Image (cartoon, rainbow, N blue to C red; front, side, top):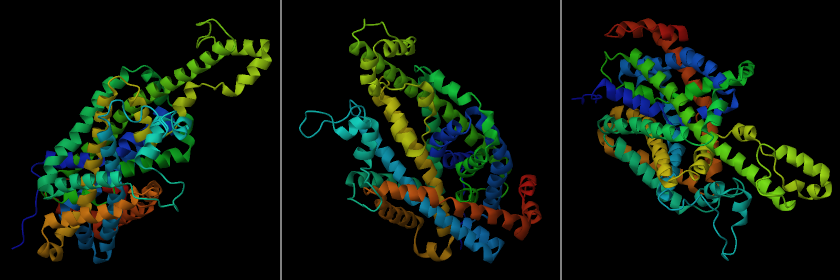
Length: 506
């Protein structure tokens, strides 16, 4: 007899699973970057429009497909039409590529988390050279946080053609990251359903703690003012609207097959329309919430760097021209510089190359995303906080929970079609299938632990799940609207669910 399909314990568990999957690192490090790049608060206008026009309908489509056919992506699209089984296969392949490189971020989070227990933090100061006589020159030319990332963590080579050696410390962290994923997906929804309560809720607790801390930091108001000051001229920029649509698309995790897999473990009469609204709004609300936290931290960092720059210029001028201490301050600095240049032109010209142009606006306008924001900008701000070890532990634990939650959805997109296959499940239990997926992905992922690994990571991140994913979702819409038919989907629902979003989408 065929085994009954596993089910979520309750609808709340399903919602937590979807939130854990949808709310990920992109909410923390890409959405704030887009706000910074495309008009601050003005970016929210195209973002919210795309949420209603694009995000909610497509999310509802995938949840309805998974719940209606109660299969993974391959089985669901094959049921609609044998010719569409390739859509499910494409989703599985994209999710597999994503799994290979995405869990490397979790390994980096483990690496930084372990080093967060040191006092002082290893990225707070430059290390000494081999003679113990001075700081390493490369670190002094950049910064301690950049040096720890590029040398202490990934040890990046000069080009992708120089593969370099394997960083065995990173390999250990990668194995640990995959072992953590394996424990969470060991028995499918039975184990994943318990884990999502943690991976979905703990990041919000950490973000709330960081919000309270961030708002009390010196200069936080500068970052928030920069974020919420709308630059409406960006609304005429087509890239703003494209970026908003892309952010909604990838933030919700559409096209990977993960949402179809999660919904397939629902009861057939589950109200997936309501859940689509809830998950969409929580996901977008989290992006805005995380941006407030990020820009408060970013404002602190920018203000700290700006004031540090001002102080260095003041010390330089005071010592060079033997001025009374306290004669120069931030308010009269420009006037004093003008006076010294006119009165002592030759002496001023001699030190002019060493006088930095300090600008708070430039500090705030420096757009950083991805690993640069997570592992350089944040760590630079954390090292200047009181009890920096505590804030570092909280931050990287949050990153780990966000990454782990996304990995549960990515692996579900692969495992659900495999366990649905009678041929595979007949010979291999789900524990073995999960173990093989983690083992194979971990072995392939070792390429990202080489000195050239960061170049490969960028290639996978830029191309593995961009255009292929757009094509998959486009075919999904055509398949539901014109191949299977909306009326058939609507009439088969055991509860009164309306398909008007999908109609509008078609």
